[in-house]
Length: 191
Image 1: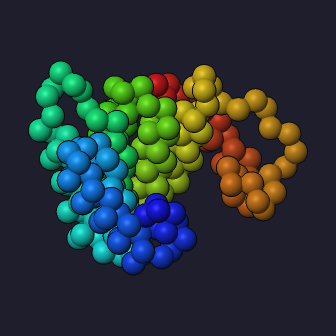
Image 2: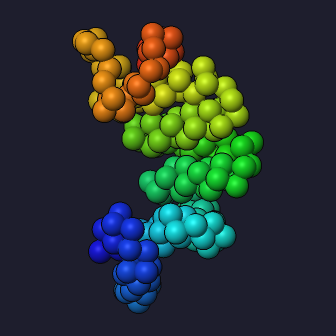
């Protein structure tokens, strides 16, 4: 319920539901459910503009992951947490820190074989590159992210027609050069 409330923008309800879920998970000794509830609290805090609270929750998740038995490997949520920390750093104008979080997320996601998290990390790196003014690198990284989202790691088949205003892959007015950079990124190794 917390995630649904967050998506609707009802942050008070999202915090209440996620807090209740966290209390229940802790009461029942369910660390994975507690992590999921903590993620709900962190994501809600960021979207509500409370970056310090979001960072505190995210850091607690990384601390819990570090405390795990090394043989168990990284929890699957670690790349998402790192990407979220990257978004927070970017929002604060800390672009180097943001890029570092996204690169670490990319490293962990590749190690886990988590294609969606690879794509999220690459998208975060693209956002940081764009914020730094390197739009060519941003376009290339978006192409790589698109390729990572594909089940085979290969880019979509050839697109036909001109992109329209609702085509999220090709913002209106992006032109041939942008699409070329996306294709360039799509040809990068993403796994």
